[in-house]
Length: 140
Length: 319
Picture 1: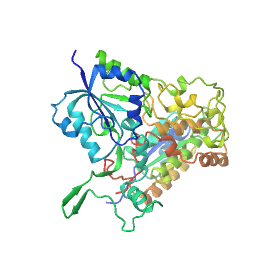
Picture 2 (picture 1 turned 135 degrees about the horizontal axis):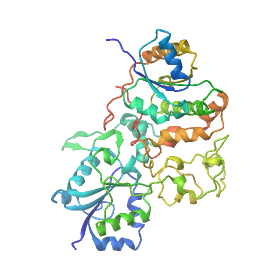
Picture 3 (picture 1 turned 60 degrees about the vertical axis):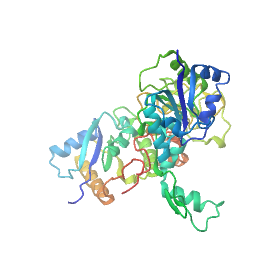
């Protein structure tokens, strides 16, 4: 059976979740691999959430927020824009490819953009293969 | 009242925790008054078979320091668990893996290669590596099996209390001794330290947190009154449990995180990523990549003591 990546999508309530909703109501066809979790702001996405997603079996994590300057809470997305690159550096040290995490901006009117981001990321993670780890016990 | 039976053990550790017990100075005599020590490899000549001969749950308290990284340590942890009523993870290594758990960034093969073959001081042209079983003329020799992954004590056996720190401070050790002596033990699972973060207890001057450059401790002489983070020095205080008595802070060194995450925090390293990135004054892509570059070793800095206890526990080993 071919590998279907499981991607956790953490989408901000004000722009990206609405953008994903628009993709749906506009009947845009896109990869069904993303499992969406609505959060109030991309600045609410703690790096812990991303680690927890991987620990729980996700193959990739997509974080989407409002475009810079458009944040409902003024600068939540600016915080996300700083946290995710630092988190990626740490994940690389832990043997996790940085392409498995993606931060992008999707406004409420960008249903098509959301669909293409999901398609792109799904293909990228498909290429990387499953996020499998040897048993983390004493010999793994 | 009959004297308590006390066992102290060290596994993957440096010995500093045992020294911390001696640092109780004359109070060590109080410990000797209320307790008979039945095992203490660093100080007294008891053997494993003495412990094996005891009946189950006959030791009142076991203070176990060090992480678990080989089969001997695992075996003794299980033995002491069976013989002890109360098991205390003593020190950062037993609680969270500690410094030995930095070995979780690598694995057994890489560690052996480095330690026994590559290290410049080695003379090992035969490339001899330690083996669990070795055949010699006289028979079979056995060494403990070295694990790929360093484990915390609680990942191997049930633990009643956690006493963090590298090493645990004397006042907290005495708190445990008092609790033992009076029988007033806290709820099982308690961490014997503060419930607040180190920042909460820190008395340095804290103003607006916004930094534009990260300094490593050797690059700057820190102001001894002002918050380290505000001076651009990475301090693990925001995501580290307090109760240590601010030992490092008072020595003008930033917190390195040896008390582990405070109550309610799952992953100390991830929280520190969040905290440090939030206060760095970077908006443009160049500024953000400068920040990422200036934090040279995020995983090693933020998980200095806590990698074994973190969500991912170790560097990913692919099957």
